[in-house]
Each structure stands twice: as structure tokens, then as C-alpha cells.
Image (cartoon, rainbow, N blue to C red; front, side):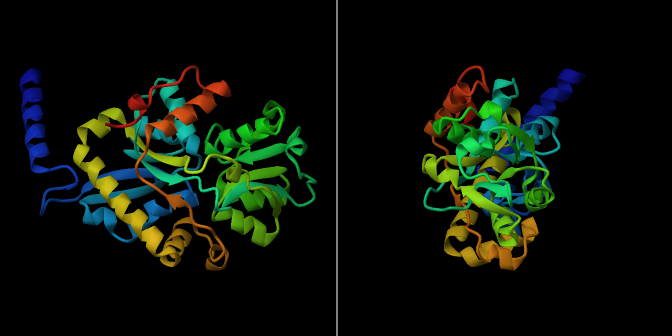
Length: 317
């Protein structure tokens, strides 16, 4: 009985797949495919917010719910647990999840490091007297995710400056709380990006020590969109539709930064006067294998992962 039912479901699945060509998301006249996309409160995801706000997901046959997740490091477990189907995660978090045995893959890119834009860095609380890399030794530094993009590259920056990052005390703090924890003195410094770095600087709860991302490789991806491998392989039409919607949203961000800032402000609950000076992230969709290789090598060097995974095993094909 079970075998007969399984066979029937398999046939039905094949029929549905044939009726839903790649990139359509849903057949004409059918209900949109519903998916939950997990995200953290960061300006790096301006393209995601635009796609939702401007109806690009709906245009491509998707009914997308955006699910706010406080810390980036918990995105992979949310994917595996099934509470979300797609998650916006940093490359370092994704690769650590893979190294830990989770079968998750990248289905596209979200944003890249642009050395010509100073839209992120490390800020220190007023009176902390932190001005150089050496000054961070023994200090308490807030990071939006242990082992995430900002944290890993900050450790690399410290190492490049001859500082042992093991002597720095790192604690997880959501980006949206950066200004408050600096004001309260709960941390000595914070790794933060837009739109929250503008809030910190405008409120004078902290000052910029270094825009250290400008010393990192230009075009290095800061965020990936990821899913479970079995979900990506079983929902190829939805993956293609998601990518099509994101490609359209990224074009919108490039063409209309003013409107994109408005959308970003509503999504992150940052006031318009703060966003007026915010620098939008550079958004890009296609992920080259070299990006995965670069991140893998950094994580091996920092002894965060045991071995480098092949890029082909991480990228959804």
C-alpha cells in the first residue's frame, strides 16, 4: 500500500514539474508558491526587501513571507528545521554549517564587498580610546554573528595588522541594537554596517575606528541565499523564480537608489534622516566558485573548519 502511494505521489510530482517550467514559479492561473525566507536586519539585503516591496516575487509566481531572525549564525539550523525554505546567510556561516554536516547549498548571491563604498566597519563607544588594531586586545567587541562575515573578516584584519584575535573578547549583538549597547557601555566596540552604522555615527554613540572592509578583496560576497539541498533539487521552479525576482530587484536598486533607501528604511525601521546618508550595498546574484574557495581558505586558516569543501558541492547546480 505504501509503495503504491509513494509511486502515485512520484508520478504526480513529475506531472506538476512538467506543468511548472523553470522560472515560472507557478503555472498560469495557479496559486503562487508560498515560501518563507529568513533574513537578518541588515542593509546588505536591500535587494530582498525591494523584491518583496515592489511585487517582484509575486510577478514570478511566489508568495514570499520574510521571517526576521536575530542572529545570522542560526539561519542554517532554521533551514534544516524547515521553518524557512530560503535563508540569507553569510558565506562563513554557510561553510561552517556544511563542515558540520548540514546539507545546505547556496542558490545565489545577495551582496558583495565594494572597496569604493565605506558602508561598514568597526566603531567604538565614546571614551573607549580605541584607535588602532592593537587597542582591541582585551576589549569586548560586539559582532552580529559569531563566525559570520563581519566577524571572520575582522579577525583577518587584526591578523594582518599583527594582532592575535584570540585576545579579543567577542560577543553576539544584533545589528539593530548596536547604538544602544554602545551607549550603555555593554561593549567597547561593535562591528556594524548600514543602515545602523549611520545611526551610530549620527547619534554619536560611537565613532569609526576603521572601515576595515575596504582593505578586503573587492567583489567578495558578503551574503548568500541558501537552502537545503533536497529542497532546492525538489523545487527547481521556485529556485529559478526566486533568482529571477532577485535579478530584477538588483536592477531596481542600481537604477533607483532613492526609492531603494525608502524601502530599506521601512524594512529595518531606520528613520529617513538617518537613511539619507546611508550607503547602499552593491548587490549581485551570480556566485563564482572562486568566492567559495576564498572563504573556505580563510576559515581553514582560522581553524574554524576542518577542511575546504569543493565549490561545486556548495553551489546549487
